[in-house]
Image 1 (tube, rainbow, N blue to C red):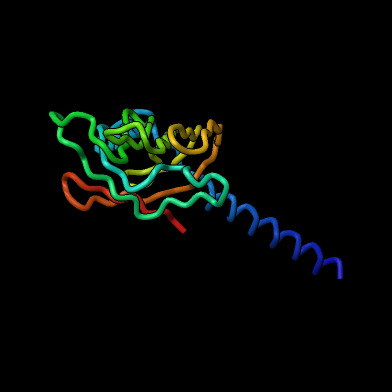
Image 2: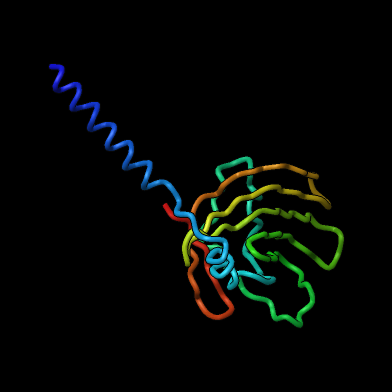
Length: 158
Protein backbone atom coordinates (compact mmCIF):
# COMPACT_ATOMS: atom_id res chain seq x y z
CA UNK A 1 0.00 0.00 0.00
CA UNK A 2 2.78 2.43 0.94
CA UNK A 3 4.61 1.61 -2.29
CA UNK A 4 1.53 2.63 -4.30
CA UNK A 5 1.25 5.92 -2.42
CA UNK A 6 4.95 6.70 -2.84
CA UNK A 7 4.85 5.78 -6.54
CA UNK A 8 1.76 7.97 -7.00
CA UNK A 9 3.44 10.93 -5.26
CA UNK A 10 6.63 10.56 -7.32
CA UNK A 11 4.56 10.33 -10.53
CA UNK A 12 2.56 13.46 -9.58
CA UNK A 13 5.78 15.33 -8.77
CA UNK A 14 7.32 14.41 -12.14
CA UNK A 15 4.18 15.51 -14.01
CA UNK A 16 4.05 18.77 -12.08
CA UNK A 17 7.67 19.58 -12.94
CA UNK A 18 7.09 18.77 -16.61
CA UNK A 19 4.04 21.02 -16.77
CA UNK A 20 5.94 23.87 -15.15
CA UNK A 21 8.78 23.62 -17.67
CA UNK A 22 6.29 23.55 -20.57
CA UNK A 23 4.57 26.73 -19.32
CA UNK A 24 7.74 28.72 -18.67
CA UNK A 25 8.59 31.25 -21.38
CA UNK A 26 12.11 31.13 -22.72
CA UNK A 27 14.16 34.24 -21.97
CA UNK A 28 15.68 36.02 -24.95
CA UNK A 29 18.65 38.32 -24.69
CA UNK A 30 17.85 42.04 -24.90
CA UNK A 31 19.64 42.17 -28.28
CA UNK A 32 17.50 39.37 -29.75
CA UNK A 33 14.31 40.94 -28.38
CA UNK A 34 15.22 44.25 -30.05
CA UNK A 35 16.07 42.49 -33.32
CA UNK A 36 12.79 40.53 -33.38
CA UNK A 37 10.64 43.56 -32.45
CA UNK A 38 12.07 45.80 -35.24
CA UNK A 39 9.50 44.73 -37.89
CA UNK A 40 6.73 45.93 -35.54
CA UNK A 41 8.21 49.41 -34.96
CA UNK A 42 6.25 52.26 -36.50
CA UNK A 43 2.68 53.44 -36.94
CA UNK A 44 0.05 50.92 -38.06
CA UNK A 45 -3.68 50.69 -38.59
CA UNK A 46 -5.21 48.13 -36.27
CA UNK A 47 -8.68 46.62 -36.20
CA UNK A 48 -9.44 47.43 -32.55
CA UNK A 49 -8.19 48.90 -29.29
CA UNK A 50 -6.19 46.37 -27.25
CA UNK A 51 -7.91 45.88 -23.88
CA UNK A 52 -11.08 47.83 -24.75
CA UNK A 53 -13.43 45.23 -23.31
CA UNK A 54 -11.58 45.00 -20.03
CA UNK A 55 -14.76 43.98 -18.15
CA UNK A 56 -14.80 40.65 -20.01
CA UNK A 57 -12.11 38.14 -20.74
CA UNK A 58 -9.68 40.00 -22.97
CA UNK A 59 -9.20 38.31 -26.33
CA UNK A 60 -7.17 39.59 -29.22
CA UNK A 61 -7.39 37.32 -32.22
CA UNK A 62 -6.18 37.81 -35.74
CA UNK A 63 -5.38 41.47 -35.29
CA UNK A 64 -4.60 42.98 -38.67
CA UNK A 65 -1.82 45.57 -38.72
CA UNK A 66 -1.28 47.66 -41.86
CA UNK A 67 1.85 49.83 -41.93
CA UNK A 68 1.24 53.52 -42.63
CA UNK A 69 3.63 55.23 -45.07
CA UNK A 70 6.26 57.40 -43.36
CA UNK A 71 5.14 60.58 -45.11
CA UNK A 72 1.48 60.11 -44.17
CA UNK A 73 0.13 62.33 -41.38
CA UNK A 74 -1.42 60.67 -38.36
CA UNK A 75 -4.53 59.22 -39.92
CA UNK A 76 -8.07 58.98 -38.67
CA UNK A 77 -9.34 55.64 -37.52
CA UNK A 78 -7.76 53.16 -35.14
CA UNK A 79 -3.96 53.15 -35.12
CA UNK A 80 -1.17 51.71 -33.02
CA UNK A 81 2.30 53.17 -32.56
CA UNK A 82 4.99 50.66 -31.59
CA UNK A 83 8.54 51.59 -30.60
CA UNK A 84 10.96 49.06 -29.12
CA UNK A 85 8.11 46.95 -27.72
CA UNK A 86 6.11 49.81 -26.16
CA UNK A 87 2.74 50.42 -27.80
CA UNK A 88 0.06 53.07 -27.72
CA UNK A 89 -3.14 52.57 -29.67
CA UNK A 90 -5.97 55.03 -30.13
CA UNK A 91 -8.94 56.01 -32.21
CA UNK A 92 -9.02 59.40 -33.92
CA UNK A 93 -11.72 61.18 -35.94
CA UNK A 94 -11.85 64.51 -37.78
CA UNK A 95 -14.50 65.90 -35.44
CA UNK A 96 -14.68 65.92 -31.66
CA UNK A 97 -18.16 64.38 -31.52
CA UNK A 98 -17.12 60.79 -30.97
CA UNK A 99 -15.80 58.36 -28.40
CA UNK A 100 -11.99 58.14 -28.24
CA UNK A 101 -10.63 54.96 -26.61
CA UNK A 102 -6.90 54.30 -26.21
CA UNK A 103 -4.58 51.89 -24.43
CA UNK A 104 -0.90 51.55 -23.58
CA UNK A 105 1.25 48.52 -22.93
CA UNK A 106 4.14 46.33 -24.05
CA UNK A 107 4.94 43.63 -26.55
CA UNK A 108 7.70 41.28 -25.39
CA UNK A 109 9.28 38.97 -27.94
CA UNK A 110 9.81 35.43 -26.64
CA UNK A 111 10.96 34.01 -29.99
CA UNK A 112 11.35 35.23 -33.56
CA UNK A 113 7.60 34.98 -34.23
CA UNK A 114 6.02 34.78 -30.77
CA UNK A 115 5.30 37.59 -28.34
CA UNK A 116 3.37 38.39 -25.20
CA UNK A 117 1.04 41.36 -24.94
CA UNK A 118 0.74 43.26 -21.66
CA UNK A 119 -1.90 46.01 -21.33
CA UNK A 120 -0.98 48.65 -18.74
CA UNK A 121 -3.92 51.03 -19.05
CA UNK A 122 -7.11 51.78 -20.92
CA UNK A 123 -8.58 55.28 -21.33
CA UNK A 124 -11.70 56.60 -23.02
CA UNK A 125 -12.83 60.20 -23.49
CA UNK A 126 -15.22 62.14 -25.71
CA UNK A 127 -18.98 61.74 -26.20
CA UNK A 128 -19.18 58.58 -24.10
CA UNK A 129 -18.51 57.33 -20.60
CA UNK A 130 -15.10 58.65 -19.50
CA UNK A 131 -12.84 55.81 -18.35
CA UNK A 132 -9.32 55.82 -16.91
CA UNK A 133 -8.46 52.28 -15.87
CA UNK A 134 -5.16 50.64 -14.89
CA UNK A 135 -5.36 47.07 -16.20
CA UNK A 136 -1.88 45.54 -15.77
CA UNK A 137 -3.10 42.45 -17.63
CA UNK A 138 -1.04 39.90 -19.53
CA UNK A 139 -3.09 38.83 -22.56
CA UNK A 140 -0.95 35.78 -23.25
CA UNK A 141 1.21 34.55 -26.10
CA UNK A 142 0.56 35.52 -29.73
CA UNK A 143 2.07 34.26 -32.97
CA UNK A 144 3.21 36.96 -35.38
CA UNK A 145 2.39 36.11 -39.00
CA UNK A 146 3.68 38.15 -41.93
CA UNK A 147 1.03 38.58 -44.63
CA UNK A 148 3.07 41.00 -46.76
CA UNK A 149 5.73 43.68 -46.29
CA UNK A 150 3.03 46.04 -45.01
CA UNK A 151 0.66 43.66 -43.24
CA UNK A 152 1.05 41.51 -40.15
CA UNK A 153 -1.36 39.39 -38.17
CA UNK A 154 -1.28 38.52 -34.45
CA UNK A 155 -3.00 35.25 -33.56
CA UNK A 156 -3.56 34.25 -29.93
CA UNK A 157 -2.10 30.86 -29.03
CA UNK A 158 -4.56 28.45 -27.52
